[in-house]
Amino acid sequence: MPSTELLNAVKDSTFITNILSAPVILQQTCIQQIVSADPLKILDNVPDKLASYIPSVLLTSFSSLNVQLLNKKIWRPEQAVLFMSQVASSFGNLEDLSESVLQGFTASSIKTLSVQKIKQLVKACRPRSGRSKVVLKESQLTLMYNMIKDDTSLAFADLPSDMLLYYNYDKVQTGSCRSYFSALGSADFSVLSSVLNKQSVLFSNAQSCLGISGYKLTKDQVGVLGNMICTLDAAYIQNSDPSILEYLKNCTDLSSAQVTAVQTLLTSGSTSYGIPSVWTQQTLEQLGGLSLYLKQDFWASFGTSLKKRFLKYYMPILRTQKVSVEKMRLFFTAFTYKRVAREATRAGCTVGNITAVTISDDSFPMDYDSAQFDACLDSSFLTYNLAGLTQKVLDTSLQTIILNKLKQLYPSGLPESEVQLLGSTSRMASAADISQWNITTTDTLSSLLDSTYGVWTSDQSKAVIMRYLSVTGNTLGTAELNIIGSSVCSLDVSVLKNITADSLKSANALNLTNCSVDQKTTLYTIANSSYYSQRSVSSTFYQLISSYLGNSHTPVHRKHTCTTLIHQPLPA
Image (tube, rainbow, N blue to C red):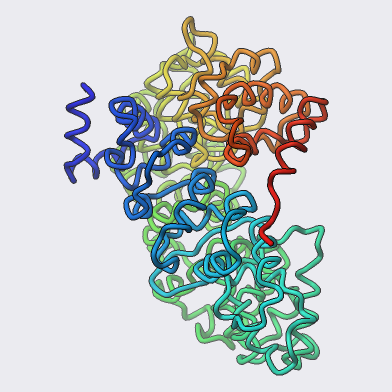
């Protein structure tokens, strides 16, 4: 599409709706074209919900900044840090700053702001009705605390709940401890580094404040603790007031012991759900997020008809909420588990051939164990129904059957059109399998490396990327780097050295957490060249290159890191 035509199209609401539902690679391509058409009018031309695809380096050179326009857009944290200082300095009411702009709160982005402005920013990040949570990392939260720790005028409810995780409890007056824990109850306790051992310390303080003794928590104590409930041992769960279940629904994860305790409490009949033997579909629906973790011995007590009705209700919800493939797989496996007689596994297809109608049912493939799935799935059916099948099938044994049948259909290698439809089934392939796939376009590369479909092993992701690079003309350009993301750490240093400075300059910041020192050093060297023109402004240079600093121990790396950090003092 010509640039002028595209600039007109992005003003149409129907086009915006369509592009938002398109694959990520297509969204990125559109934004690249929009940016190239008129680099001076990025904020005017790029749709608000697609601003996260603007290369960060282009956000460093505004001659003037329309803060109102900027505040309406959705940004990545590494983008927001580049203009946080300018926005905070000129924005009328910091309370009105968007959640994505507030995510740019870092030492380098606030160093020119007054202490008063900084405190206003911290307060703006507090939980507020009608607004999404401002998601911040541990380093940002500890910085925030250091900036307000001596201000006794701030109420706990006026502070970000996650920041309260790092609050010095010695500063909490005895008469105010309940208010502190009430505000802390909204925090996400998973942001705490395990090495800090803060969870046990926080609960110990809560015990003293709330008068908790033994393992039985009252309804009032449960209500005050809030999300801290997610960190408690199983003994507290099964012995406390049943209202504890409502708070456990909000947990991002539950341990096996916690789940067992939940099941013990549910089966006791002492909860508002009553005795499980009289539960209905509505009762199962009311379990909410707890259903995701319950084990096979719990689900085994319910009849097939009830379970099938519930599955038709629950699976679409999990997909809409974008629950991870791994969690959905564990749920589906536990929910549908049944012992299969050995003689039945040797029989032919007895459940019924798998058809388009079969897979359209949201309870599919509940009725099929691996033997029946293999017997009832005709290889030719895959030719026209692969997408529908891979979307529904999560069980690893069934996914392996799909891959084996595809290999029988395409002995010389899987066509690109089929590769793009594999979804989470692709994760069952070996590196040898992947080497036989056709991966020639960024569309295919993007569909395979989409994290929505689960995690790749390092060997698998390397095989995918190298298969793409084996095609003449394919390189690790900007589009490829945005697709690959953290999988860049699976590549050999010799491959990384082929990345150009221009490609890295326009790419999103890469997550190098799993990279080796040699890999980090190689990427830092390229990044240093990419952002060389920004070195005159030390804070901007640091913000752009910070994700590449990592743990490289080369002298040049240490030199630039130290030099830059010297210019990053905290506000007085």
